[in-house]
Length: 575
Image 1 (tube, rainbow, N blue to C red):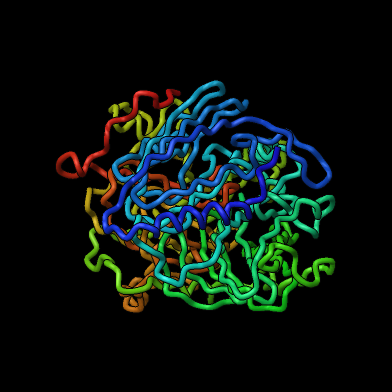
Image 2: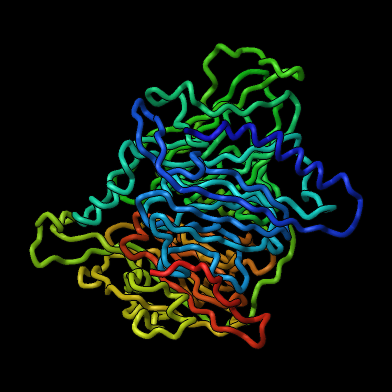
């Protein structure tokens, strides 16, 4: 069964937030939220066909979690599916608690079919929109949901209170089992088949076959302001999003407030969230919300379809507004390869005021990120269907990340189990080259390994992501678990360590947990390594993660209990 229309969340969220503001007391009262997430296959019909789809509590998308800053969550995951599974609470900092982070074979072994595991964690100094999703191969295609964090009791948004708000989850739909799509790609070594549709709150929308009846509809009363909490849960695609005839005001990204700015379109990468305000100031009627691909890879297949939902004006009595029978107006979206628009949007993001950015750097890291090719001893065989008889790979600093299979990285580190990983991940590329130029084919083949980079507690880190032209330049949305970071600079071409840092924004850069590497360019971030544990960093294009575009940091304990990882829970899954 499908989940109810997430527009219904508007009333519940407004009632919850109104409750938060009723009291004029200055203290906050944290709550503990208990949930059971039953992961199981259920029939879901899309594009005229019914599939046995992995869902949570029978819902697709899964349940929306609504909490306040300071609240704790206790979520028992019950695996009734036929696949191993884990859940990741994307963007939650999980201070001293990697055991609740979720990526399989990194912080935990997966929950096996028939097994359970209870995730216990607290939201600390975070407000805005995050989300949760499976972190086990391609189960994320359908196992995901919104995580809404309201301000503490007595606090409020740093912008005018909207009349209502909606979570809006952008996704991808495959007209077959996504796990079979992945299995085929991993066997052949070729690129995986692209999705058959994009979705908004699980529904493809009016432009796809057999889909109009389920199109998500968001009601609006003329004159009111609405907060849209937009989440890109798509498996493999950055997306442009717009609302016909309505200007959006961006007020937050990745559970961090931003300096408000107006825009007609946003670009949002997989893993990212963006909060926007819209005002229902147009003629009463029906207006399409729409999303389609922003594609930066050259000569690569992508899903070029468009998903839609409807912003529908209603009267104060709840009845429909004018023009309900007419076809909604469709927004003008940028061209698929419009990097100029995408870059301008990203460059407009700023924190509301001065933030604490490290200025003295202890660890200066330079990571090349991109694709590669593995040569085959028997080219063009069934297992070598990549370009010129190779297999696709991906890497960071020429290391193609290999997930362990006998233990998780965090469990092995905590228990002192040898042989699971090494700590010699290179801080810079082993061989410098013209990263965005004509790269010698001798540099196209990465090395497969499970290497971690060790950071001392409290280290001040600068990390530059450098895209490469190996196979193709591309925007790689890089996600760092366990941390938010300041995006201090971006640019095209090769990063210049002499001339680019003086241009960094060290005053009010945006805070994010996922940032694109800039196609054919670079992005620089800074953070303080004040969260001990093993933390995965990876491209949130899942087709790239499974072929090695990731690595992990090992942040050592500091001094004393408050700077050390808490003990593992007794029900932590075993491999």
